[in-house]
Length: 305
Image (cartoon, rainbow, N blue to C red; front, side):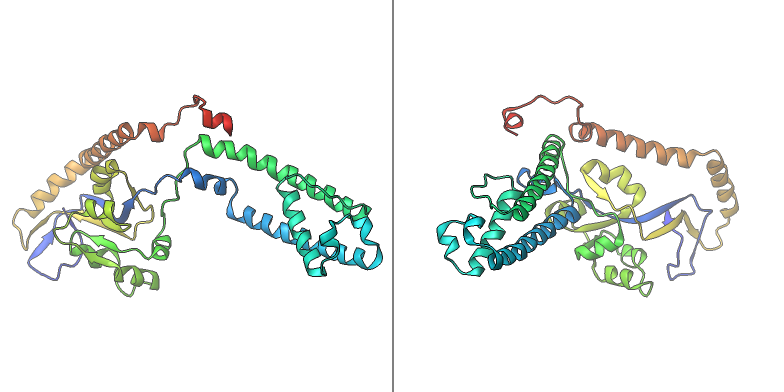
């Protein structure tokens, strides 16, 4: 079957459309997150940012309180180390930042202030630390026992942000997928499309961090089982039909046969069946990854956690 489009010739015509297909981009699936990176994934980025900002707000508030106390109260009530007590105000404020980090990370704290206003603040920091550390530890066990993977690309905008090369096996895909002057996003993606000719598309995508172009049906049949990921947002949709010479004498009879086949659902049944077989093959090959058992044997590492 051929896409129903203008092929710059008047020597052919199309039969009745058989089915609809999409031109989509695909790439190698995102890999598994290394164990060393898992603690950073316990909280999402906004939460990490909020915790960092909270640290600075608490430290700055304590610095203001310490400056006020330095001017009104004797150093003995601050209970500072002798070398800190003799140091400049900048060193004392730096010590405040260090004390806040010690309290937030729930580490042993040696010198507590004798002033009630600072003790109230320290008690609040300890309570805040207790909540954060408890949430961190409970989520940490989850990320270590459940496999985590990097996020796959799902939209054309995300593909554009990555700036990766897009490989096309057929020359026709160069203009069919990203037509010029459609939008700024499509124009940028069009510039990244490269025709690879006789090179193996699968080998190239496995070797480099690049994308490829294929028909959605072809992906379901051939590429899904090879651990590739299809970007859900597909740029083009085409009707597919057979091609015959211009003024073909039996076009009406051929269309009549095709309409009967379509009415019987044979084409849809065939495409669905082949896609289903491919998906079952993929699930069988990746059973250990896709189906996480509900019970897990604890190891020494889990006990240490």
